[in-house]
Length: 117
Length: 117
Image (tube, rainbow over all chains, first blue to last red; front, side, top):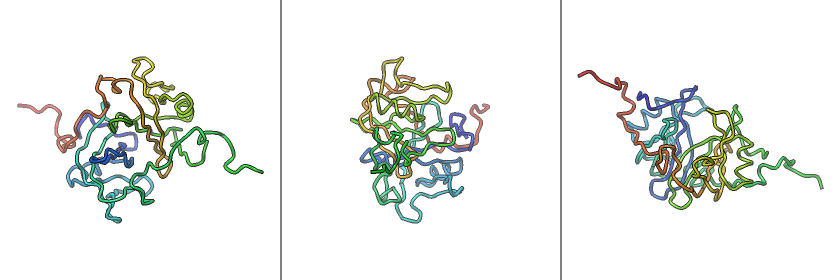
């Protein structure tokens, strides 16, 4: 493995996925060494699922796979950018991108979720 | 803090920064609760520097600050997407984006960095 690639203490590296055609940022997943190798050799995106603790071929079940266009590494080698062609909606909710919720100052106010009348 | 926001075990959440005008993915940084509050209240991007262990007002020294356009949260609440207007090159190398190195199969071959003749 090239020295310029830096996996974290759990052996993972975050990978941002961007739609190569529209420029839309679709999701962020984590890769281990094996999933990165599979991504580069197969031309489809593989992650490591932190919740299931297993390799995760994105879209293998839904069919909404991510076809790799290019991979880029950031300046200090600890983040990957995947430019891809999505075969369908990326998010498990059916949305095109996982980033479909606006985040505003309202979200960080320390108020109860449900206020009494 | 809204329940839908999920910080990791270190109290951090990764934040992907995208140029709002060009769509270019510029960098990934980490925010803690305080840097997210500062980002939302000031309209400029603040991170938490994991190496320096302190709040980091991006571009405060270089002048290359990131002006917030919109913040988005992903479906499971553990990644932020910042759409921003960069005031200059984002990368400390002087590049416009931190993702300027291509990553290919060559990078994951287990060969020595310098081969003997």
